[in-house]
Length: 312
Image (tube, rainbow, N blue to C red; front, side, top):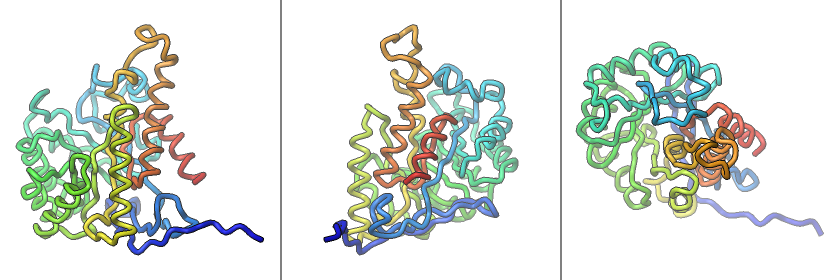
């Protein structure tokens, strides 16, 4: 008697969203079963990898292993973006770290000009990520949205405290919103409802559930993402049927285990391999929880994760 694999019945599916414009635009979502459960349903669009740059030299904020592939271009966002494109990411991420009021606090006009300079030089979809400071992010993202009109950027993080202002700007200039909530199913749903009430179309929303790194909250993130997927696929909760983006690299590489040198922690082994594996393991875990877009940093970690996606 032949063995028959037991199968889960699904009544919902994740909405399809297109990111970027032109020939290099990518489509995410569309799955109607749990991640990689292609024996139960369809997964028409493979997860995508977005590789990040900062709009300033990260200096000591980055581990030496993470800086090494880009050491000659860290002070020039346009050159850095072109270097990243050599690794053929599906998307590019610009982290607007210079805007941070607790750091450089660069003027919004200056930050938005740097973002536009990068956007004008690349042909892949671009994610523009702010500082989690409502006042500064509103100022920066309004200008970015206007200067990069019709580029269909992914603007984030858009939170409840700034969703009206940034949401209106993104809507007005035809961009996609990364709706960010603090690792909570109900808050994620609530923000999607608020954006819908504002007039943002369903296909213009991608969910950021907030991400923890390996050993620093990853298990909590994983469980919340699982619950979002369950609600979307088996409970037909149409307010949660959105693709998911994970801002994960920053969370991984800021941990002490990723930044400690071999001299400081010889018991942890090779520092470069350690950081790369921490990023790759975090990425694979998030893929298994339902991530559609991963924001990553190190090319070797990207290579490992790409291999995993292709094998799955």
